[in-house]
Length: 102
Image (cartoon, rainbow, N blue to C red; front, top):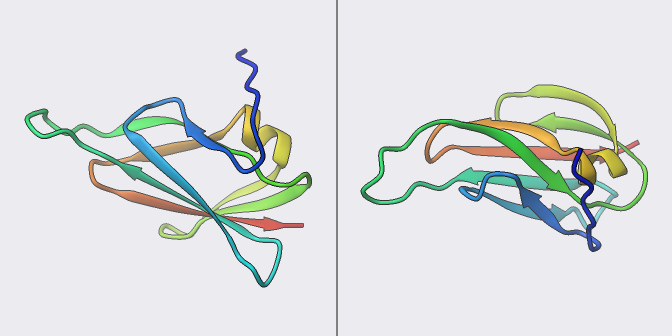
């Protein structure tokens, strides 16, 4: 088990080709995480599966992937930052997670 140390609102992935971004809804306590599978010119694109790590304010969050509508269940902020959220993408695909504070 790898221990990760995070700064406030830091995002990361265990696969360098997964590009991440975290957005905050100014009207409530929800956060949105976007993940894009980048490809390199000259290399054959392949699907990947990995973990994305999200550092959000302390608390419990209902996690939903909005493009597929998949409910990933309830996660606490510590697990989201240290254990991560499982992410599988095809080349040039995007995942959008909603982290709704409970």
